[in-house]
Amino acid sequence: MGVYSRTPLAFERGEGARLYTTDGEAYLDCMAGIAVNALGHANPKLVAVLKEQAEKLWHVSNVFTIPGQERLAKALTDATFADVVFFGNSGSEAIECAIKTARKYHWAKGQPERVDIIGFDGSFHGRTLGAINAAGNPNYLEGFGPPLPGFIHLPFGDFEAIKAAVGPTTAAIILEPVQGEGGARAWQDDVLRAIRQLCDETATLLIYDEIQCGLARSGKLFAHEWVEGATPDIMAIAKALGGGFPVGACLATAEAARGMVVGSHGSTYGGNPLAMAVGEASLAELVKPEFQAHVREVAGYFTQQLSGLTERYPDVVEDIRGKGLLIGLKLKTPNREFMQHARDQHLLIAGGGDNCVRLLPPLNLTIAEASEAMEKLERACETARSRAKAAA
Ligand code: PMP
Image: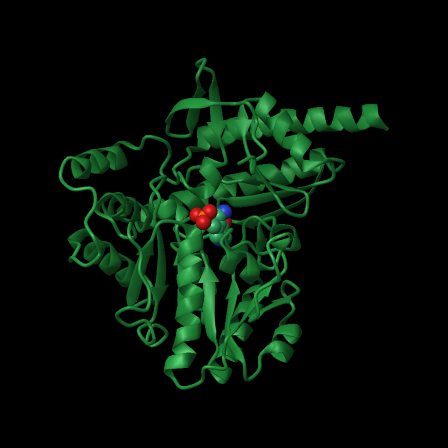
């Protein structure tokens, strides 16, 4: 189906932060499959565990005990607020599980009327019916029938609106601590804390979508860890967990997951041995304090360099935002054109809402590679400036 707006670029292989086209041209990858290849392309550790597992066992049904699944679930619960984990194959599936878990929680508590999921402008939770309804972006809902009942949408960041909206039929609030597709927008710390408190007072569940901003991208294992007193009850993760192998997971406290009993949910492929082997190896890297310190160092370098760029090109770059290596440049010139200017410099960057472009490099990007990315961005800014002048 023609659902993607594709560029003709086709890559044949990758190594670290480099991608090579079928005719051998090298590109510096600062989008990483949209925050997926966190450990770079063809990471030797991930390749090794995948090969090793491929020779042993690919798939068995979830009617059997899967030791890799138990190990990865333990590693995830050890590293987070969560007590239990459900594995799926994508971010959207993790979101579906999160929504179902939240509604089933209230049902199990004898309050089946509590079904409403409150989401926010600019959010993105995936493309399944549940996920597009949770995010409420009209562009993604259009043509797919009536919006599903039980979803409420509020402006981004407006705590008073949230307070007014939470009521006797509210099940959960869902948000990305740092919005990805929406243009690298971070929620304010005090607003997140106030939401957590409101959830506690009203027995509303707090769901975080850390599919893009989580797993060390922000410089801590999860973006919400930057804010004290704002842990969720349920959290969806994916992307970096598999470093490119499809895997997603829904994490929850035992209390929030109380309705998820035998028969409540399931997946044929979720938690398969291949995904678990890669997930275990990825997570083992991402949880290392020195790995997260590296992310913060490279992010700090970008922040400093990008502020210089903004000063030199105020006619092109309006604002820098985001957290860690989820960096948004809000532009004054069209973002789609800017992405092409960057590609002309053999730099790959992602688009984003609100006329942003995003830098989402592999998290093990070196400072030398970051510096190369900055040189290419500088040239892209130069092109954007001369195009704007020629058009004026
Ligand atoms: N939530 C967020 C925050 C995302 O960035 C994405 C993917 N861009 C998703 C959900 C959906 O993930 P998937 O495409 O793996 O279903």
